Length: 276
Image 1: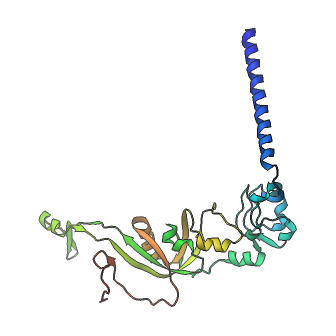
Image 2 (image 1 turned 90 degrees about the horizontal axis):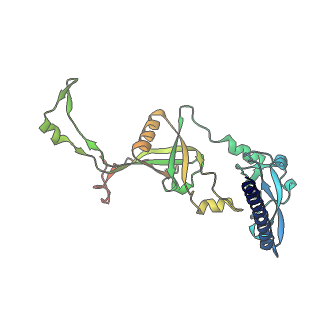
């Protein structure tokens, strides 16, 4: 019994010594890694900061840390008073450094939050799209877009017909004659649709020149696009998103509203199609 107790105590002591040695080694390794490196003080987020938070209230959300110059973010904030009068333009999360470009004037934030005026007879519908189907993620609230709908072939069948308001069953041989499948198709479903909101993944990175990066780097995941449409068009849009594919194209006011035929594999190779 005593031997067993002695063995347990010895094992605990060895584990404790191993932990102490590991902590000391990690600490020394960090010191060696920082040896010769110039350190700078930066503000690091410790508590989530919601967009719209006043810079004057940031003190309880951040802490000062020393980091090597090479990992200091471009435009890192080194003085909270320097942000006076500004607010967070986006949500900020623990671990990231405060960057001046992520703060904007209160008036600018207010204009942004005012959003896009929605016509009273419209409803808003949100669809999830890959970046390539949402103009590479370049959409902005207030823009107008054309909505294109693409469908894979689907099976047709006709087992009954309506005669004088009554359904009449077709003979099997006749039903087989009219059965088949539709072609692949793409059509310009809706025109000049108002975009009211665009949401991208929260983990998207930014640097000091946010707008330049935005114009050259597509979102890594999907984009949520909200559009204002009438109830009937909302049904068409949701149906396409559920059973087909949606593509968006930026549409300016100067684009003429022509009536074009639905494109299929047979028509897409024609140089011109005459619209009846």
